[in-house]
Structures are given as structure tokens and as C-alpha cells.
Length: 464
Image (cartoon, rainbow, N blue to C red; front, side, top):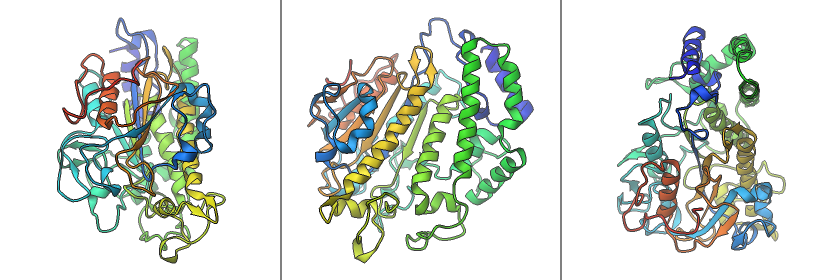
């Protein structure tokens, strides 16, 4: 263990704060002999309702020789870091509609005969996290977050809510309350236990702490600044960037509304819970804060694997009326244009409103890549040292096609992936992508398949 690792643990004990307050320094002493760069990281973002192919899908081939379509325009600065993978199949899920959501990250055998089947195996994030944990001492194997992802499709039960699994019939419920995640990672004084801690009490405790100290870094920042004077130029800059990142995260949390929004009752939200985490009116802000938390957790060495469920299997309760231009009447005469509604009714008065939603989503993904690319690490940046997998469980909400899935990869994962292309992937199973992701992250112990021996073998086209 390095000198900094010991010092880091001592500071945590002395100050009574969470590991997220202290940056992971990439000094030469921190790495074993022969290590050429920073540890690899995996980011997974799962979403729903597909994309409007005519406004989202690039042409096959190099992305560098074409301008991306309008819905994908936010990704223009990241073309060299991307792989578009379209037309992927999900052969272990035979049905149409939304039922492919629960098993998309396992891609193997599943139980049940109805639409929403349950995975029989670990999802890719759990498998990678478990493999990393065998050799790395990390506070968390994975960090699994969600945004309004526990609603589910009415009448379909829990199987329409989750897509992360520890094993057979063992779903991982993503943490939807950013205040609780912040408290667990940064505050330290807020217990991270399996006992019942309500989101409201957690939010109240962390808010009180922040109000008393202005920022938790007012509590530990001086110690870090003093320690930085003993380090090299690169590590000094890392500490400075870390301090600023945590302060920015705190500002995002404090910006979350603390009272119910006007859409709460209309969307079926029961007052009295953690309003910030359950009010659909806060959706856009919650997505941003959860993405900020993912990057912060990676940056400070809490974990190397993070996931975000941006939604459940259908998004029936998430209105996009906050986007300029979204209007009209939804299902059953509602004035709320939800994700699901817009997918079934993309055109209103010849205006493609679903494409507006797609474009907003791509902007959120691009913001994650912006952040990761701005964080310098040995051997490159956080993005170049990572694999970012963005999944969807249907081609387009208007056709519910689960055998033509539009996925994306970003980051070369230290040269493993051949980025900068819209790969010719039509007809290839998603299990092959997951096998590649595992092998990129765990090259010392590669797998011959992931999820299913028949459909889970790596296939050519995306590996460098």
C-alpha cells in the first residue's frame, strides 16, 4: 500500500468524512511496478424507447468523414471517441415490446414465460466489478444509481423496473436519492447501512451538515491543500480539480427543489417522501446530479464501475414538457407528454417531438463525455481509460423492435476499442458487446462469451 493510501485512510478516520472527500492521487508510489496508466473504468447508462433512426443514426463507416444527424449533433465533438452499434439483436428475449429491458445487460438465459422475464445471471457491471474487487481494495464494488426508475409499467411489477442483477432473481435496486448517495460517499457521518434510513432523513442530515459548514470541503479542504504542498505539480493540480468538482456537485444538490412540483399529484407522486428524488418535475436536474455523482465517484476512487438507469422499462411517468417545443395532448387526454407517450406519438402537427427527446438525451450523454475527457489521468484522460456503454432495449418506441437495438460505446478503454465509427453490427447479438466490454476491462482473464454460450461470443468489428 502506498504512503498516500495510508495517509488517506488516516485522514478519513480523523476527519470523520467519506472517502469521496479525498482524491485518488496518481503519484508513482500509488501504482504497482509495471503499471502504465490509470485503472480502467466502466460507465453504463441504460435508457428506453429507442431513437428515431432518420434523425439519430449516422451512415456506416467512419464518423470523422460525416456530420452527425440532428438528434446526434451533441456528439459531434466526440466523434473520434464513439462507436455507434445499430441493429443489434437480443436473441435470448424472444418477445416484442418493453420486456427486453430487465435482461439487456445480462443477455443470457432468463426465467418466466411472460414478457418481463428475470435474469439468471450477473449483469455486466456486477461481473466486472466483482472481478476488479479480487485484486483492488475499493470502498464499493459498483455504484448503481437511478432516476425515477422504481415506478415500472403499471401492472407489470418489479420486473419492469430493474436491469442490474447480482445473480439469478437478484435485482440490484439503484439508489434514486442523490442526497443519500452524497451522504454515503462524501459525508461520512451519514451511516451507509442496510437498515431503513428514509430518503427524507438522509437529505435532512446532509442538508444540515452543508448548512453548518457551507461545504464539506470547508471541513477537509485545508488539510488537502496543506498536503498538496508536499506533492508534485500534477498531483497539486489533481487536488485542486477535485475540490472544485465536489463544490460544483454540492451546488447541484442544493439546486434541487425542496417542495413538491406542480406535476407531482398529476404523475401520481405521493407527498411526504424525498420530493427531490421522486418528483417528475425534477427529472432533468436529477439526471444531471446523478451523472455528476457517477463521475465524482470514479474520480475520487470510490469505485471503478458505475451504472445509471435513466428510467424504467417505459418512462410512462416522466414528462418532457420542460423541453421547448414539447406540447399537445398525451394518452387519455393528458397534457403531460411522457417518454412513452411521445414514442408512440412522435409527430404532433408535423413536428417530430420524439426526436427532440432523443436530442436532449444525447446532450446528457455528451456532458458525461465532456467531463470524463476533461479529467487528466496517466496515459490520457478518464475517457480514454474507460468504456462508456449506452444501451437501449428497443429500436424505436413506435415499433418496439427488440431485435434491432441501437447501442453506443465511447472511450477506447486504453486502446481496446476501435472508436470513430458507425460499425456494421446489424444482426449481431448484444452478448458479444458485453463480452468485449468484459475483456476490455479484465484483459488478464478474458471470457469466451458473456451471458449465453451461443449468442455471447465476441464478434469482429469493434475491437481495435
